[in-house]
Image (tube, rainbow, N blue to C red; front, top):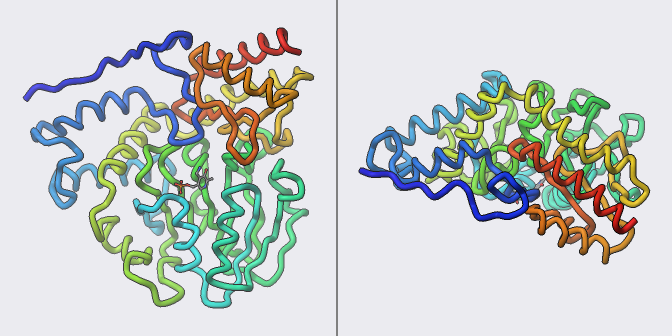
Length: 383
Ligand code: PMP
C-alpha cells in the first residue's frame, strides 16, 4: 500500500516559516511532526493497511494507541497510580455539569474562584445541583484582570471541593508565581482543588498530588477537539448521587475510557502530542520556552505607551497575551497588518475585543519575534 502526504509547505506569504503563524486560542497550532505522523497514520497505521480512524476501538491496534497515550500522559506529569486518567467527550464545558453531578451532594457546598469567562460558566452551572455553593472570589468588578492572592479569598462553609481555572483564555490571566510557575490557592481544610486547565495544561510543571481533579479540553496544548482529559484522584470517583451511566467518572474509569466508542482519533492525537512533549525534554523545558516566547511580546507592551495590556503584570498569562491599541479602528488596522505578515487569528474574544496572541506549546518562537517586530513597527507608524 502506498502512502500519500500533502505538501508541508503552504503558499503562505509573509510568515517566512512555510505556514501561517497561527495565534488561535483554540483549536490551536499543533507540532509539525505530530501532523506529519498523523498524515501517515490516517492512511495506514502500524502497517495494518487500515487508517487510525478506521480501526475498531476494541481492536489490538487501538489497544496499543490507548495504552501508549495513557502511559505518555502519565509520564509527562508524573501522575501517581492513585489518579485515574480518563479521555472523555463533551469538551471542558461538559465538566461544568459532570464535576458537580459526581462530586457535589444535593445541597452540598462547593467554592468557586471566578477569574474569567469560563470560570463564570462553571460557577453558574453548579447552581443546578446546589443552592449552597458560593464564590470565594469574584473577579467581575476588576474585569478579571488578575488572579487573587490568598488574602483576598472569602471562604464560607467548608467546601467539598474548590473549583479554579488555572489559565483564563479570554482575559489572558494565569495563576502564577513571578517566574511563571503554577501558583495554587490555599484551599480551606484541605478541600480538594478541581482545576480547569484547558488552556495551559502541560505548558509548565505541575504537582498532580496538589489536586483532587484536573480536566482540560485537548484542543489547545494536548491535541485536537473531541476529547477532554480528566485526571481524578481515586477517592473522588464515587458519585455523590444517582446518575445516568455515562455521567459517572467511576464507569469511565472502570472501562478505561471505553464504555462506549471513544473519540479514537482525538485520543490518538493526544498520544502523539504527549510523546512530542517528552521528546522536547518535558514540562520544565517547555515552560522555559514558553516564558521566553511570551517575554518577547510582554517586553514590547512594557516599553510602549501605545498598547495597553489587559492582565495585571503579576497574573500575565504565558499562553494568551491580551492587549489593545488606543482605539477599535487601530485594533482593526493592526489585525489587517498582521495578516499581511502571515499572522492570523489575533482577534480578541468577542466578549472583550482587542487583540489576543495565543502562544501555546507548539507555537513557534519565530512567530513571537515576528509579532513583537510588527507591534514596534505599527506603533512607530501610528503612535
Ligand atoms: N475552559 C477554558 C479555560 C477554555 O479556554 C475553554 C475553551 N476555550 C473551555 C473551558 C471550554 O472548552 P470546550 O469548548 O472544550 O467545551
